[in-house]
Length: 458
Image (cartoon, rainbow, N blue to C red):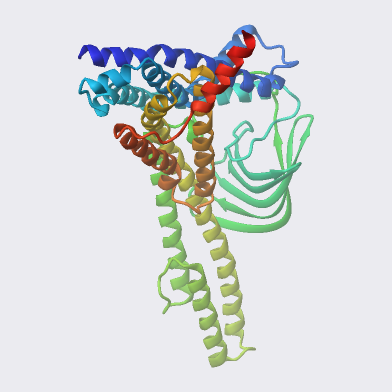
């Protein structure tokens, strides 16, 4: 490792740790202000509160590190450019790529560490943070229900809400694993939740109940307009649990891949069941996985049977009733498939996110190095402002992509990697122009402002 390499690398370390500390302090303070109501009136011990803070510090660290890398690169190259060290190095025949190489090495090291962190440490801390948060929530007489996550605080139930408007929950999915081994899945368009002294009442509207016996032989489907579910909750005090159930953000990459594979197998089994039921009712049907086409086959078969037997024929009436039940069953099956596909997309988003966010550190090195040379000695405030601007753009892009991917309107890979691709192209372009010594952006007005303030103070 050459002296120049060590010198440039050392220039990144001090601003990186300082900016990381500042960012952690700001983000953690903002988080605690939002979560302070969880602690009020709970009678929690000091150690429980410290544990809660440390567990949530992990995901804050995952967000803060790429931004700290950008600030560190800006400050390092800004300081060296302001002291004419970059000019001196390039005058002596050292290329811009060689000057940039230590920063790229720094970015690669941070990326590798954060990929490991996001796959090993972060899922565990997220899991324990959720359990602790649920335990704290249990100490209050009412229960908090978050949208977009599986909720397993109620005995024998796993619940997910797709949306919420005030007290009305939407797109409700409930898994009920009963003690006798029977499985029950409930879907509802809307619903309300009411807490009573010894439990929770879920009032569901316009949905379907799927019941499967423990021996997997008996299956029943019930459509309802209104249905009430009473879940007894005996203990609402703080008890520390050890749950094996994990959400997507609490899984390692291997766990997520296994989960995706399980859902793909379920979808395949549903399609097999659909085609088997259609073949039973319509012998000459074509096996396809397209609901409109299947419905058209049912309509054609019903029409041909009516024309051959007559509308008042007993056989036709019985067949027509079975075909109606078949269509209702197919609609429910395809809704279930659509739900599973959304889960697959959601898990893929989380899988790609484990790698795309750490990779942003390397992308920010490309941007930060060029901007640092352009801005020269812009100061800590300017570097923070520039970093915040790029980071807001990055996260806005990422969050928007995640939203579209969760709805199935965008590929999870594109949604999670597009911010890196866009900013990476911008970073490479800035590096090429900087290597050609072309000044793309004029930041001299910041110097004039600083000089004017100094003159006024004197």
